[in-house]
Amino acid sequence: MGKLFGTDGVRGIANKDLTPELAYKLGRIGGYFLTKGKKRPKMVVGMDTRISGDMLEGALSAGLNSAGVDVLYLGILPTPAVACMIKTLKANGGVMITASHNPVEYNGIKFFNEQGLKLTDETEDSIEEYLLNNIDIDYRPVSGEIGRKILIESPTDMYKDFLKKTINVNLEGMKIAVDCGNGAVYKAAPELLSELGASVYVIHNEPNGININVECGSTKTEEIQKLVLETGADVGLSFDGDADRLIAADEKGNIVDGDHVLAICGTHMKENGKLRSNAVIGTVMTNMGLDVCLKEHNIDIVKTKVGDRYVLEEMLKGNHSIGGEQSGHIIFLDYNTTGDGLLTALQLLSVVKEKNTKLSELASIMQVMPQTLVNAHVSPEKKNAYLDDEIIKNKIQEIENHFSGKGRVLIRPSGTEPMVRVMIEGENQAELDMYANELAKLIEERLK
Image 1 (tube, rainbow, N blue to C red):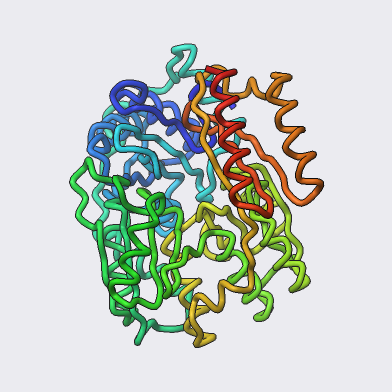
Image 2 (cartoon, rainbow, N blue to C red):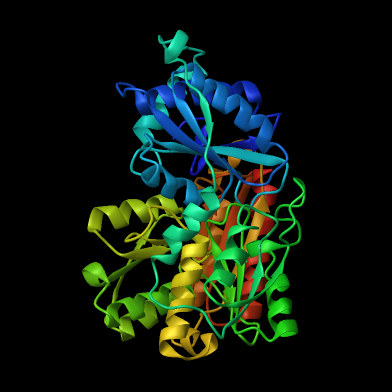
C-alpha cells in the first residue's frame, strides 16, 4: 500500500489531512482510472452524516465531473448501499465518503469498481503515483463531455427493496431495539424493520453532523444492551457510522458479536445447503471459540489478515458464501460485496424467526474464549517497529510460554490510527487483562 490509501480508502482529519483539494484530485484521477474508455461514464456517490461530508462531496464530485464522469448522487446512505447501487443503477463505479466508526473529525474516501469491489492495490498505486507526484491526467473534456451531478430520487427505498428480497420471512411479532449511531442508517434501519412488521424501539437516530459515533453505535454497546432490557426487546441491533458492521444483543442484553453471527448464520446455511465450500472465513482476530463451534458442526474455518478487504479476497478466491470479523463486518457474498450491517441484521433475524427460538439460545452454540484487547498509542512512523524490538518480542514470547498452548498473543498495527492493538486470548480473564496492559504499556514506552 502507498502513503495515501490505507486498508479502507483514504482517511484523515477532514480539512486538515483530507482536504477539499485532495478530494478534488481523488475524484478527477480516480474517476479517470475507473472509467477510462467508457462512453458517458457514471459513478454513484454517497456519504455518512459527518459535517465534513458536504465539503468533501462537493470537491470530489467536481473532480469526477472534470474527468467527464456523471455523478449519481445518493446523499446520506450506508456504505453497503453504495456498493449495491452501483449494480442497480448500472454505474461504472462508486465512492463512499465516510470514516466508518472513527470520531467525527475524521473522514474518508472509499472507491468501488464496477463490480462493487474495493480497488486492487495496483489501481490504488496508479492513482497514488499521480497524486503524490502532482501529475494531472491528460484529459480535460469540454462542452457536452463535461460530467454532471444527477440527484437520485429515493435511494433509501431502492436499498430497502434490495434488502427485503434477501429473506423469506416477515418480522411480525418481534420487538427490536435499534441504535443507529447517529450515522448513515438512521433512516433506513427503523423504516425497513417497521415495514417488515417488527415493533421498533430506536435511539441515536437524529444526526446533527457532529454526533456520529459519539457515545453510541457499535463501539458503545452499553447503549443497545440498556435499550434491550428497558424495552423487553427480542433482539438489539447496533450499527456504526456507515453501517457496514453490526453488533447485536440478545434478549438478556448479552452481546452477540461478529463471531457469534458467523457461527449462527454459518451453521444455519449449512443446514439449508447454502454454505458453499463448507467453510466460513474469519480473521486472525477471530475468537478460538468459533473454531471449536464450527469443528463440532464439521465446518471448516479459513483465516485471513484483519480487514474486510482480505476476508472478501479469500471469499472470492474460494467461492465462499459467508465471512467476516468479530467487529461485526459480515459479508454475505450471495447478496453484496461488502460488509453490510442491515443485511446482516436481516439474516440473523430470519434465523431467529425461522427457528422460532431466542437469540441467546442460538448464540450459545459458540462458547467464547476470554479475550482482552488493549490499544497502545505510538508514534505513527513506529507502528510496525514492534516486529524488530527485541524487548517487546521477548515479552510476547514470555507470555505465550506461560499459556503453554492454551492461549495466544496477537499484535497488529491499526490501519487508520497511530496505535498498535494488543490482543491476548486464554482461559483466565484477570490474567489476560494483566498481561495485555503490561504489554501495551511496554509497547507505548518503546515506540513513543
